[in-house]
Image (cartoon, rainbow, N blue to C red; front, side, top):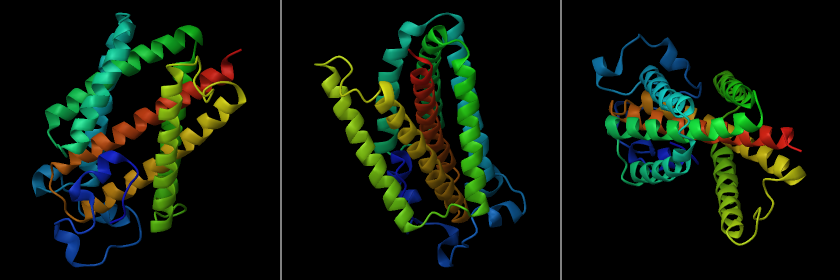
Length: 262
């Protein structure tokens, strides 16, 4: 199985080629999701195996939890908690990734903490640019739908070359962002990657990379389900998708703010 630039999926041995699964004995169809959607309906709980359907359901649950805590943060004006929640969420995400955890409670806790972060950040941007949050939410949903449609139609195929390109570009972008953060401690605005025309370019690149990471995630989830991975891996896959969606939303929000700024 091809590797993903989403660290949550790459750190899980179950999503690597050669992981044990009922479908390992035969070749994998090149038509993404087609076999899974044509197969008789069965829940992960009934089969004891991960399914595309179960990952979709668990992703919806995680998004719902994040939305609830985000709404509470917004309504009760708890924006001061956004930065601490962002740090705690980052640490928790790294623990889940590097410890390869599939504990539903821990993953739900991550979603709740991310909701606090997103709620605080969203209220801040909404105060500065009224209507921007609705635009960012619609943009995130639209990009996700388009990338899923392109993947399912076969217009975007996850080949080894495609994967290497996305992984390499994502790693390079993360290094650049970290460098900008470090420089920002000593110089206001850092390297200027989030301001003016350069900020717009960087924002477009970031959104593009997040979108391509979604394609890799779709492919790995579909193949993981087809290989018959254990049911618990569905929670980990849903967590991985949530990580990418949060990245995509924040980048769209940031780009819209630059475009609407002075």
